Image 1 (cartoon, rainbow, N blue to C red):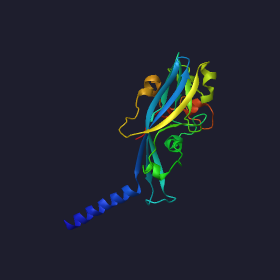
Image 2: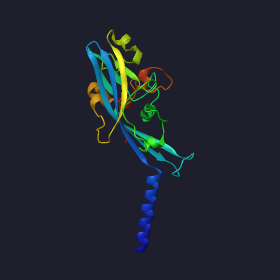
Image 3: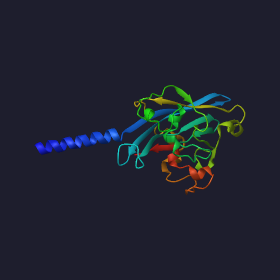
Image 4: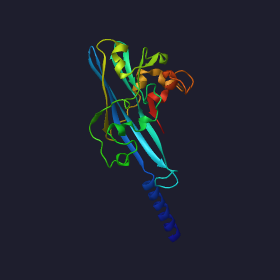
Length: 228
């Protein structure tokens, strides 16, 4: 019994050491896009969760220490009326080439370094609605036909009127941290883009890294993430 108790205490101490040394942080935020139309302001939001887990041989900063991120949630589909739409994808850059910034752009939105430990550990609280500015605005795309993924194209915030016509104008994209009890958005975007349900590759069918064609970069994870 004594040996068993000592062993149990050692296991408990080990788990405590791991928990303290390799913590997991999870944060949720509401991403909102607003566009002026001839019929008034249109707005839509999505709640996304980002989890960070540290790993390595020792629970201190070292060359062997690393991070893994898990994203859960989906982009934002904004119906502008008359068959027009804007979709905020879960990537950044002119052609959605930066797929990793979604992990920490919300930290930057509040004026912090991407891996600021006091933010991730919640020692520093992020409050209020923050208006996103380039390059923190995720990539925006539009579908001429939401039922046909081949009709996708990038639309920059400053090109909204050029693409959709007079009376259309990008108003803003905002980010706000929300409590863990606020549900992550799930399944809404697939109602608007039903082909996502069966999509298993990029929109062009193959992955070509060295291209500027948005269809080569977008895949199902660009619109919806449910990382295990």
